[in-house]
Image (cartoon, rainbow, N blue to C red; front, side):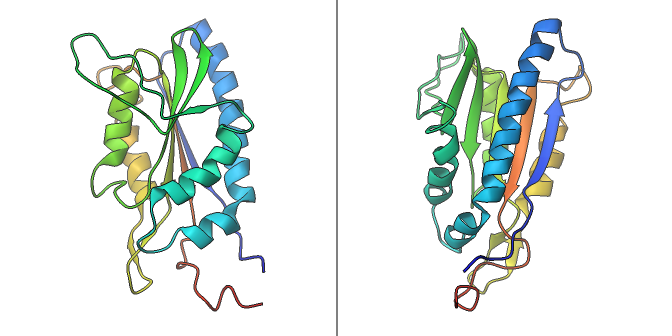
Length: 197
């Protein structure tokens, strides 16, 4: 049975000043972002079936990997080069190499998106990595409590929080763009009634 489709929410944040190379690079990043958004919309039923109370983000990550790894050539769990002066073993869910030393960091979040500040940690990872200048962040539109109620709605909070790092040179980090994708239903989790034929 096909469930009721929910559009994937999307927010695009871009540094306010770009050079010509970054502008050209951003066109390619935007194309990849459009493909990811289409994939998430096409796989909405599968995502809704695994995005339930107590599930792991790896279930969503596998669905995202269908496109990123298997079709577009993203790599998973790659340890990024450490930033000078920082001891880090940053290992994002996905990374895509645009060119030598230029890339996209991709992360899939679920339960701790805002409650454990995973969104800010992902932005920090993109900022300190000398290998990545773009962030793809896949987050839930809503996370469900045990009783089936929305206990939080991460997507709008993430877009607002990360938006603080763009638009003013004083606040901007070393990230050219952040693309935030909101997956899942907003009207309640999938139930047994939804799955009846």
